[in-house]
Amino acid sequence: MTARIIDGKAISQEVRAEWKLRADALKARGITPGLAVIIVGEDPASKVYVGNKIKACAELGIYSEHLELPADTTEVELLAQIAKLNADPKIHGFLVQLPVPKHIDSNKVLLAISPDKDVDGFHPMNVGELVTGNPKFQPCTPFGVMKLLEKSGVEIEGRHAVVVGRSNIVGKPMALMLLQKNATVTICTSKTVDLAKFTRDADILVVATGKPQMISGDMIKPGAAVIDVGINRLANGKLVGDVDFDSASAVAGWITPVPGGVGPMTITMLVASTVMAAERSMA
Ligand code: NDP
Image (cartoon, rainbow, N blue to C red; front, side):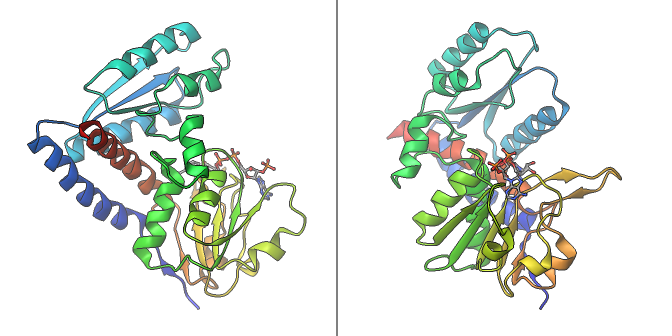
């Protein structure tokens, strides 16, 4: 079997076009959705992400601000900037790009963001609403994975979904979203004994470990939908996922490439969440 490629770039364009219509409808009613991103310090990868977020906003005609604060910004100063954005009517959603420098407590930062503007969905109140099945904002990467599955016609209800990885930003919310769609969900971690036993039973396999190419074709059920969240740079400069694409695509039914799979969806869902927040502000 040769897997169908889930083209994240194409699906992302399709989803952006849908959300642009909603952003345009808001603008016709006098509201321009606004997103702000705070970045603290000089992390080059974070700068690239932030640049891409600003570009996506421009594409949808969304107002965006980005605040670049120096690495020695104190926690008190950062919390003061967050308070300003919480009160700013032009801004419907914002986030603080993680990681923040070590002298800042990232939990305090997440708690300070108004749950009504928390487009990343990391505030404990929004996490709780995801757990109870009525989320206001959902973490963008797993939210994007759900869109990829939906747009590719992958059946979720009643299927066995295995999520490898349990981070707060990908693995755990991913498992909750699949559960919400009536999948039977297994979560695997670095402590799982005999990982392949679980992955081989997965109809839907989502891998988010940060371990390059750790899932090979012999660990995959024939016909499964394989979603590779990982982004890893090899020593030779090549970008690869957590799944070994060549062997996996010979067995899977669907597969996301890296790059060009999950990555483009993450930012798309961020702008979608900003438009959603602006819509809610009118209610
Ligand atoms: P974390 O490092 O926070 O979490 C990794 C998880 O993988 C942990 O739960 C860990 O288990 C588990 N894990 C590690 N090794 C193994 C193993 N051998 N077997 C089973 N489980 C294992 O990573 P993130 O969730 O933040 O990110 C994961 C990957 O996704 C990274 O490559 C990252 O770059 C990428 N990413 C991509 C995004 C996108 O937009 N496409 C967005 C966010 C992340 P344990 O808890 O036991 O340590």
